[in-house]
Structure formats: structure tokens, C-alpha cells
Image 1: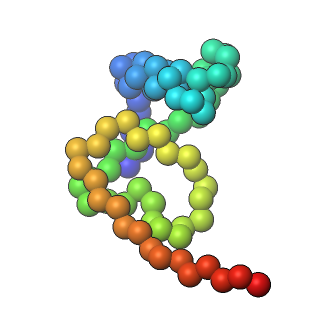
Image 2: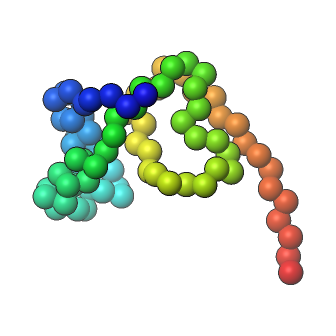
Amino acid sequence: MSISASGDQRSRLERALARAPLFGSLDHATRATLERAFTFRALQGGAALFRPGAASDAIYLVAAVASASFATTARKMSRS
């Protein structure tokens, strides 16, 4: 479910992006633009954020996890 972000959540996001290697080198204005594009979601226990093999249409920044499980799939690689 998408939720409206509180001021505290936005502050934590700002700090997390500034520390992240991928986003930390961006200037403040660019990070602020990126922050406004984020949608906050809360998931119920057992709900999947995404499924293995699903097409990617977003980037996810996980802020907090009480517990998590991961499913992996083996892919057979062939050489041509």
C-alpha cells in the first residue's frame, strides 16, 4: 500500500540517500528531486515486494525490515 510520507520519513530518506554510494555523490538539489519521486510503501507480513524473474520497473530502497525471507531460483546458463 502506498502511504503519505511523514516529515521524519523524508528526513531519514534524505540522510540515507546522502550516505548511499549510488546517490551520495549527487548534489543536494539533484538528491532533493530524486527524493520527491519516491513513493513510500508499507507491506504486510508475508507480502512480496517483487518476485524472482519479474521485469524491473522500479528501484527499491528498503528502510526497515522486521524479518525477511528470500526466494532464489537457479538459472541454467548455456554457451553458444
